[in-house]
Length: 224
Image (spheres, rainbow, N blue to C red):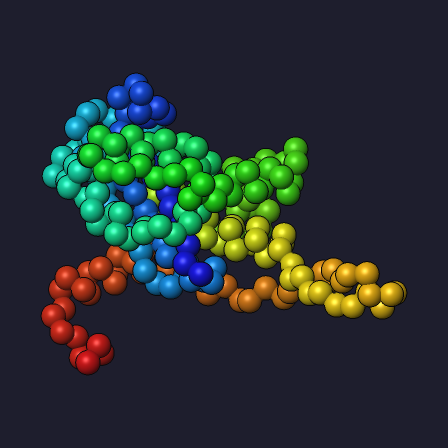
């Protein structure tokens, strides 16, 4: 089972007000475990950053001047996510921006039922409790020490851990057996499953080191 954990950063709160996506970060999960595959892209929004948004993610106008516009990266993004489920925290926000950008680029929009909203899952499971990504990280003891500001890729890493805990805590297997009382259909027995250990995701520093090696060392001997 392939799923894509996805997060975006934007210039503001609503594309109807002219705001745009400035960063997309995705992780590929296979059977709810990170495969190692990622998609990460900064995007030139062709407009100025709102001060409030800058305080959240720290992405400046200067950082984005030489980055591609969304239309230029749309094909790679679509190819990476495919038709697989998108795991998003507060999916309505990200899907609204993604579909605005896709439509503006002349691409097919994403159906809302492709998104799995972890915010909705958390609110249903823990009614009345804080359900932000930070709050869920605290609840599930997910380490956020490597994050100073919000970022699409690092938040996707955190969300992958939160999603694993949310699903492990809510799902159970179903087996069907004889009722033993006259054969009037089967009874349903719920069996709890032990969660599999979730491998640690790399830190931002480890990802930066890997990217440096890939760019600086051609045909390394450890990959032969």
